[in-house]
Image (cartoon, rainbow over all chains, first blue to last red; front, top):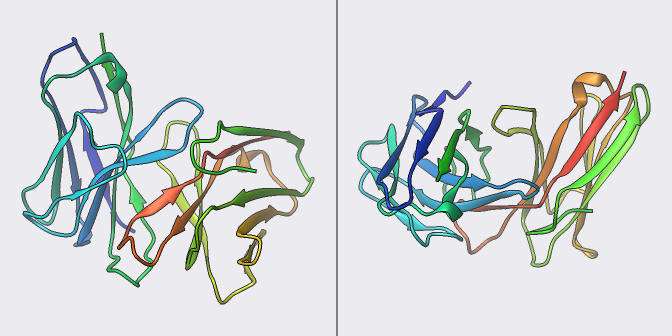
Length: 115
Length: 112
């Protein structure tokens, strides 16, 4: 089974602060994703990547940067955090290429609070 | 039923009952995936149904897909308290690469 880990699991920062969320997958998947989940809502895609050095824009990218340094590692960067970015963040990976509708494997989540 | 940015729906049933959760989508999709998210965990896929399948079964789970009405359903028979979770449908569109779009979710509570 795919293993996706995230760190930190909980983070508190202040408005204007810099935050980096980390994700690592150990199943050699080519796709990785960052989502945010807000109370009462489903998951919304922030950014995704299909390999090291690649970045694709998701549906809610404003205020977020991301970087895929290796096949295993995908980072989400909040350079000027705002209270509206308080959320539960999930990383996921999949082996899907276009036309191959692969299952996404999710990490345990990182709860971010911006004061 | 759930879709897009709709608020989370909620259902509460007694253990042993059957339940059906519905999902409607706005644009043509080639695949619907159903995910379950238990408290404090990330979502996990339950079942995937393609546009050329009308029904897919896996254990106590049954998914249907009606492309004409752009809707899908997930049924669970003989629910257990451990089925308590949030259930999401997610659709995959031909021109969107590997992106999935998740619905708002259904919070299912199964009372023991």
